[in-house]
Image 1 (tube, rainbow, N blue to C red):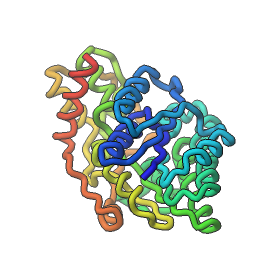
Image 2: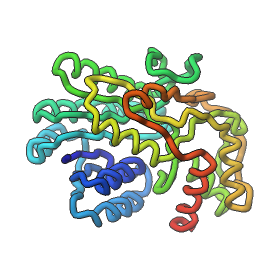
Image 3: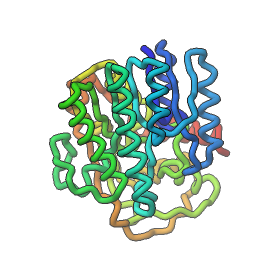
Length: 316
């Protein structure tokens, strides 16, 4: 297949693109290389992907509507994996307009371009943040998700709803995959796993909200990309599917696992939990197992060890 991967220079996008290339797909990556974090890390991901003859990177922005239409018309994609987004829950509180512009309006441009060119399947990356402080645990896809706690989640939920409308009106195949606390090699430097590693290895001071008494469904990136690849291969009409591990871990324990591997304590400062944060996320992955054959393989202990091995080899 010829597949567009948006956000291909990022953490999950680069891992997904490489997985698709290894299995024999042709991949066009799309990324705007913004400076939300050091673009050099994205360039390193691009360089890794450029080693594959079946890969090409396009540097552009999903907010550029006509450019997206031109790209789709020129390339004739079989499928789209749309992972590009303005990420960062806390940053979204500062810049809500940017998050709506990118995560909602940019997504609409891609859906329109896919519709205009007859793309067979569209996979839309979303987030467990859409569940907010739901009382229904584990999180199940039938939850209304109508009380998002910050603009990032609100824009993502709005894109999910728009995707249903496009399926209903235009018969597009759109599968929404909700990611749960992804971590692993090539992780973003603003994500918790990377921050803790930096703190333990280099003494960098970082905040630990609510003394780490928050539960997260830590999911290793390879398991996540397995789920996305399966969604690409299975046009399902319209579905929303959780991609997590289904086994939440206390943040304080996750920090402890990294500290054990580093051989020293992280330099953390306790701070109150922010209103934009939820206390616990926990994925019900029964639907992913049934529709996608999804079966996460990497335990948190093993995943942290793999992440630390990558960090020690590449960041110290």
